[in-house]
Image (cartoon, rainbow, N blue to C red; front, side, top):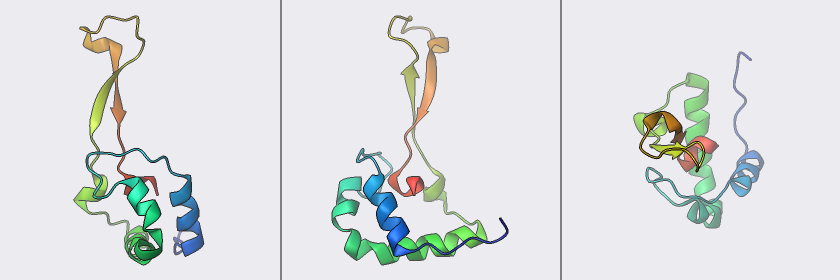
Length: 96
């Protein structure tokens, strides 16, 4: 794939509607709020994606995601770090 195809409103609307509505601490806005205000926000989302994707340029906030330790099995020792795995909570805009 040599060239990125520009994002279209229909594609973004479908993606946003399919996303889980969990909130991540680094999200600038809650997912449910983006869903509710999509008709107003869609142009800004498309412009940002269409400018960033072809250049492979992503700002620092677009790359940040908190990591939370998650125990692999409830029966394991909570005091042993080897029983945990990292769980990355992706911000809403990175799921697009």
